[in-house]
Length: 253
Image (cartoon, rainbow, N blue to C red; front, side):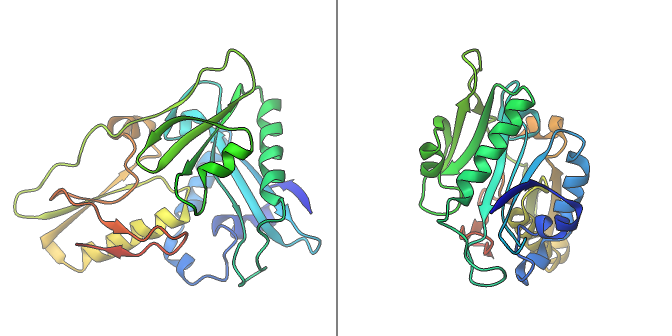
C-alpha cells in the first residue's frame, strides 16, 4: 500500500469518490471537477491510497479552514476521508488501516505547510465519517450542530480552537409558490447528487415551484447564510434525505 499525492491520471476517479462503477454517481454532474479547478490553487491537499496493483482504493482531501464551513485561523480542514468499501469496482478495502495511513500523511503535509492544527467533521451515528473514528486518531470534539460533530487536533500550544459557522437565516417564502433553495459548494458528489435531484424535481412542477441555487463556494455568500447543507423548502419543511452514503434519495413530505 502506498500513499501518493493526486496525479492527473487519477482525476476522474477522485472526482467520483472512487466509484466510477456507480450509475448514481453520473447524477452528480461536473460540480466536483469545477470545485477542484478552483481549489487546486487555493491550498487544496489530496492524498490517495494505491494497492499493489496501483488501483485507487482510498482518498483524503483537506483545505485551508478559510474555505470550509468552520471558523479558524492557520488550520486545515478535512472535507472527507474515504476508503472504498463496496464489493463493486476495486472491492472492499476497509478495516485494513488505510484510513489511518491517509490521515497521518495529510497531517504531516499540513504540518510542513506551517498549519497549527487539523480540523475534521464527523457524525455521531455509526456510518460514514464517524466522529468516534476521528477521536481514536487523537481528535477532540470542539463543537456540534445536530448530529454533525466538529473535531480538531492542535499541533501547537498557541493554536486557537475552531467552531462551526452557524446557520444565520432561513430562505424567504414566496407568496403562492413552493420555493426550494439549494446550497451548492461542489466538493462532495453525494451533496451534488442531492442538488441535481432537487433541481430536477422542481423543474417537473413548472411555475409552481421556484428553485434557487446559492453558491456557498463564495465565502461572503456562505458567511451570510451559515451552514445549511440540505435543500430547504420555503414552507418551513426540509427535504428529507436518506443518509446512507452515496444513496441519498430525495423525498418531499
